[in-house]
Image 1: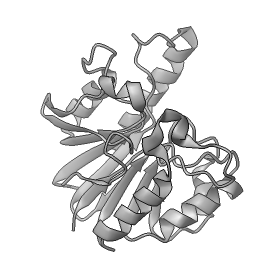
Image 2: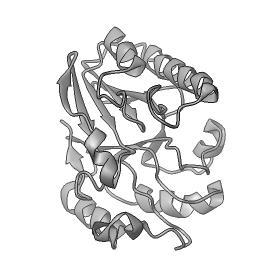
Image 3: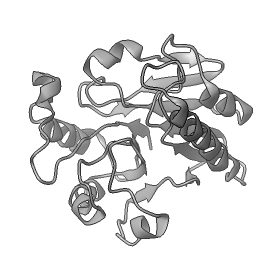
Length: 228
């Protein structure tokens, strides 16, 4: 068994959102991801996908892309990204009856002796786009991370957190999301969201006892990254 991760698949069920505006490396990015996936992932491996799954606007449109993921090898845990407008209630997501996918929704997923927790996250308070409205959303997302972590009621050996947004400020210092993770002795955190020039804001390695991985698909060259 192994744990892998890849974020920001940006699958396009309609074909009107080409990602090559971010660079030539995005040409045929879906094919690159799925080809590598089929080569390296076994049915008992776990794949973490923290957000920006599909450009679909409605759940029935997103089902096309989610079914593609469901049919790939491995067990998948999916979180919400800032572009996942199709994301619905937990009951609506579960009604899709996707056999190999668990949607994180203020809860957790147990894989072997590992707990997977997480939430979407939000831009850091020192970012240019942060305004007074964002304060409420930021705090709500911090609370959702705590709800997810607090939902783990059985003994586990490791806790992995998956976020869509990086849990760091623009100056690369840890923010409030990291403080919550430290409280619950999280060992690993994966995140995405950063593309192209945004890669310069990626922070990786062990910080405050937590091993951080940026797994935006273009950051990891459209190949799933082995986390553990």
